Image 1 (cartoon, rainbow, N blue to C red):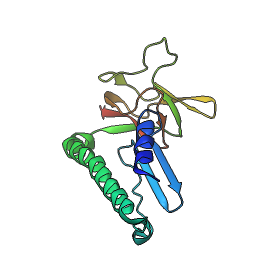
Image 2 (cartoon, helix red, strand yellow):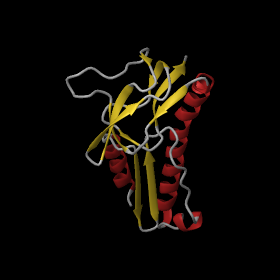
Image 3 (cartoon, helix red, strand yellow):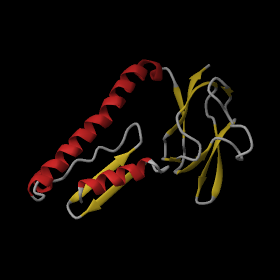
Image 4 (tube, rainbow, N blue to C red):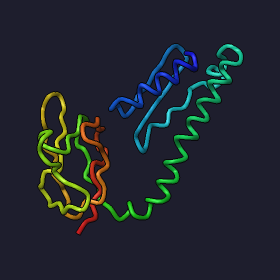
Length: 167
């Protein structure tokens, strides 16, 4: 795969609501992720991946390494800043894979905003899976400190949707 094709693929991925993409073409593997904790995929045989024709393989390896470093930098800084505060917070997580909706319909207000109080059993969002709308109810009481997803974003099983300071 050519570097220009990789750059185009990254730009297109960035403009979608997808959170992860894995592309394999022959011996070439590419994993893109917008998640806080993406899967760490390492090549099974690094020597084989470097055997791409001449300089192109080195360029690809350098691009991959620099991209990985850029991806890790912001997350490391963000994690160290928020590590202490997030330890005190509980999460409302998605019980299934699907598309999250933070409001019942496009013309109604969101279920919850940052700073709102949430009680056990209260609906906080909807996750659509296989054309079924599943109301997600809080299993904790407290104040919402963070909405960890965007409206109409694809969410994974057990992915944090809201962070809540219990009490």
